[in-house]
Image (tube, rainbow, N blue to C red; front, side):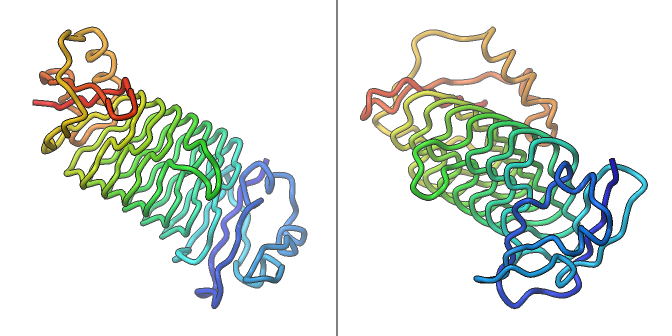
Length: 269
């Protein structure tokens, strides 16, 4: 396998669709074939070399360099390998991933990790709205894997999420964990309005300032020390605001009873 470095020549005038530019898809290509690889630019297909300089690497990683805020679907349906974005990334980053490791050393646009089913996506900056949510017109959100956001996350974080783990070090926007079906969302900062709206199952861990549970969530009558230790240790490996969770106590609230939900809020003390 051969790794590649793709260096953005200049900011594109229109948005660029980078679906298909993944480590496994490019591993067996030669330089000339890679430069001719068609990518979407507006409503046209243009050669990859129109936008990126191509250079081989000594390892099997795929590295994208530059401000790729106008480049969408980075890591789309990625199934393995390692992809690094040395800069910002556009919309749909890591969407429909099933494996591998994708790291963004900057901010990511909307719909990051939407319908993700496996692998790990790490965003060192902020994530836009609808992270770990659904593709437009779909019913299922994130279905597996791990999303780590070192900065803030926008609105509708984890909307309709069904499985997997989302860890946000900073604040989260309004309607976090809305319509959550299953999985775990951990928030290290403040949370916006209407968190857990219509959630049915799953866990939301508030490691930072605890919001006031709405009337449709009720205090849990039973403690869950074994469950909490297992979950806390899993989250603690991410460090930051989650590093000391195993030593802290919690309050649990169950809901959303407005939809006969059985999810839980874990408020860390």
